[in-house]
Image 1 (cartoon, one colour):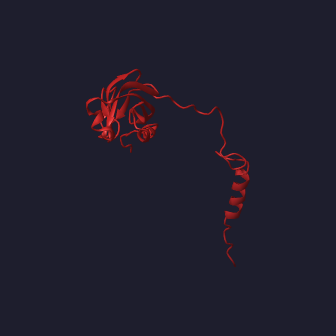
Image 2 (tube, rainbow, N blue to C red; image 1 turned 90 degrees about the vertical axis):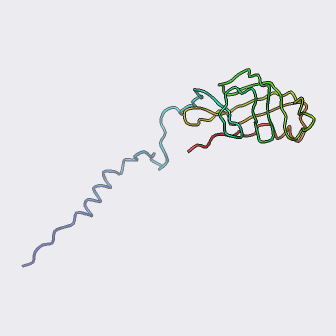
Image 3 (cartoon, rainbow, N blue to C red; image 1 turned 60 degrees about the vertical axis):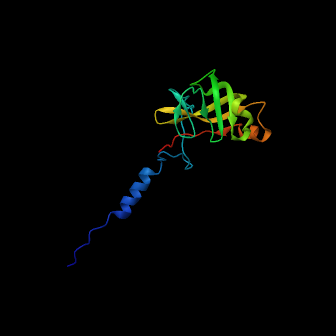
Length: 154
């Protein structure tokens, strides 16, 4: 007498599972792409304090003076705005490129800090432009829309 071998339900189970899930697209659309519903999220404007970081990574708010790069310093800054998407100031600019002429009297300048980026619970301005009619032409181009130091983010 032969003992019948138990049937393995794999083929029947697989067929049942395929039939049951054939109409389900899961998180994907019928064509395999991502299905998106509802309105797109809007960019969230920054909220909270905004800082600027000097080359030594010191967080500063409305600084009266600071080194905006290793070779360019700003002084006598009077901020018209701060904690906004763009901060504006008038002041003076000097650097190693103008020594000794500007040592006693730096050049008048306008400063624009913009594009706050989140770093932990605060924001840092990430880009700057410094304009002065007295800047040498080659430096004037380098100080248009340049990146600022931002503390390391993990």
